[in-house]
Image (cartoon, rainbow, N blue to C red; front, side, top):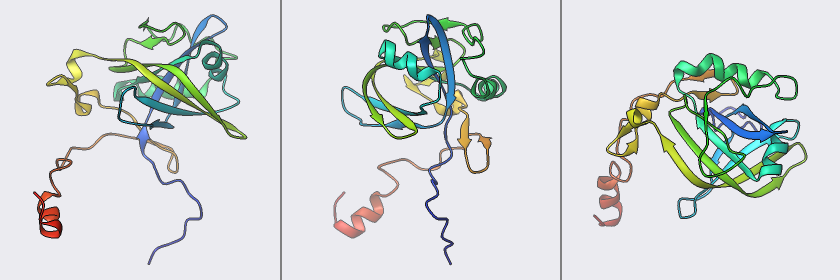
Length: 193
């Protein structure tokens, strides 16, 4: 029998990322897990959901840009710490070696194996949160995490965040091929190959 969990958000675990922006002339970073894919076409858009109280929001509004940096498992302590301190009180600009891409105001972290820089496209305003929709301008990856020119998440070893349990998880092994494993069943239901 199913148990009603009220209106619980059960979309966890999600990738943990470090969002980068510039606030008052300094790079600042924020740890979040509320990242979404908005579309698969070109241009491509992503979303990040931030509570309005976060210091980084003003930098995103000012520079119309932000970065999304994917830390690996070996960065768990640093990533967690960044999420527990506010840029209002602590200068986080020296916590990482940084690089710049095409956009001013979207600093990226060298140590993170995957990075995306985004131009602000739109902001969806909720009473306590803002959802920033960004157009991906460029994506970067360490050569060591690529397999056949594509990011191999087993090599990235991303941190996965589980809000209900307040835990970080590791990525498991792939076990089936998308748009392939269901072909036999599709054929039996529709007669299509």
